[in-house]
Image (cartoon, rainbow, N blue to C red):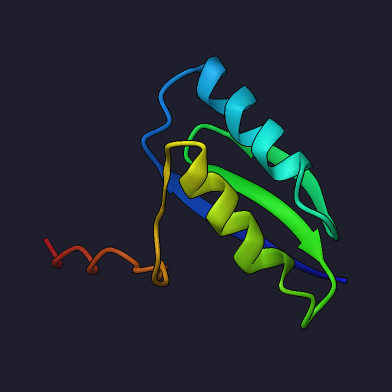
Length: 81
């Protein structure tokens, strides 16, 4: 199984978390690991189409999947004093 963290915008409360949890729970072949405000961690079989179905379910529940990659950017080094 592969895992992914889906970043989600538009979530602001426990009701939002519950709605996303429910929507993802109905996607065949998808295991929901965690859902929190702004993200959901899921597991799925590669090539099953479950990840795309999960993103569609989130959209249908009224939230937006944030596409793209988040880079870990270190702050610039502090100047020598």
